[in-house]
Image (tube, rainbow, N blue to C red; front, side, top):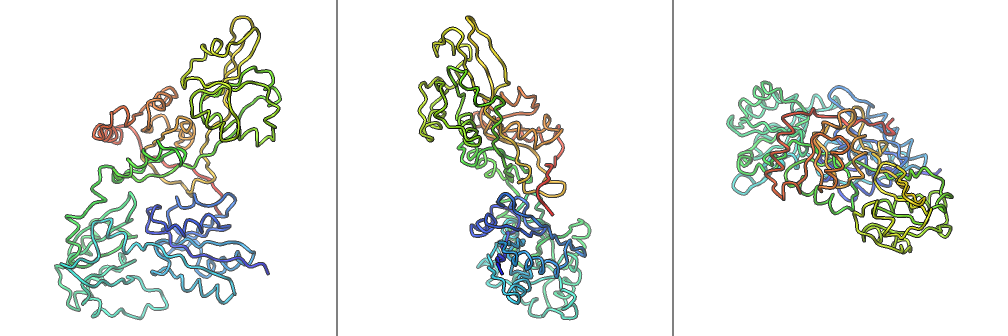
Length: 503
């Protein structure tokens, strides 16, 4: 029998960047990914093309798939020879039932591996400004579940031992908080002991409620503070007042959908700036498509092929490969606008005859290329297709080698999609992808661009709320004021549409 394997991967507490490198590698290899609701949907963007994504989210009193069916699903897919990843929120060993699932693999002789993750019981307090140990307050900490399964429903925790602990971290305890409070007080815990509840830790929805043990259940009820949340009981909670670093950032609570190539320096600077300001950055997966609408055999009609930038070069070369067109059949001369476009050709062992200025005017081409009577030029750039007739039968044909689109099938969202507050990009080619991603309300969705060229292109498209750090000359306060006005004024929180291969 061709047996695959099952890899149990800790997805971390919510922030997708807290995934381990080993976890990311496992997702990239997976044929099947079985994931739950506490695993960030953005992690699914690491899935390879064609991977099957299976949602088995668990909420209180409602399971999409019962645990027994999940166990059998893992075995069944692995026995087909599949590389199966079971993506579990936080760390799989911290109240994550990985032991049961791994035992099932062992019983069926299915190889398995367990990849640790950052548990929410450590991450959520830290993101709320609460270190779990501090030499001025404690030297011990206990992790405990506040929810007992039916099998152990009659077994009470050792409340005396728990009440004696300096710091308690309680998972899944919101529903049973009145009972937890009552038992800790009954076994001697001081009613004035500080308590914190951190909901949706490490992501933009994070909320923190601070109270005292004697009244915490009433405070939670009054605030309508619901699960999922981590409960911290102990003096270290007092440190939040001075160490609250995450929720105090100026863009905390804002999710920005960012489009651009991962290798693009402008995108990296933009993402870095947004993250330092506290925004949660959601990458938009992009795909380049060769869309040149004329048969490649017609290229012989052009005396010159002129490429506006590096992207047009890469799209053109990808299109030639896709259609198995031998570059040696090209009889046209090649010209490029800018050194970047020249280097893009150079990587493929092709050396253009002429390097023009980056923003060369179309009307300057006849003289720069020394066009003779009835000669034609094909200009490939991010422009609307058009034909420009010149004197003496000369012609400039404007077209695009390809486009950049939102790769919806690999968006890493499910159901209604992941909500976002505004958009950002460093790449004018990504504007059409952002338009597609944002849906019908795209024109009123605030957009931050990394350079003035992209700003101009966005405004020309019809984007109504556009700005750039460049326009503010590096003035972060000015950019923050613009973002704040955009937030309060004109746009709803949107939800990215998604289909994906989700079963």
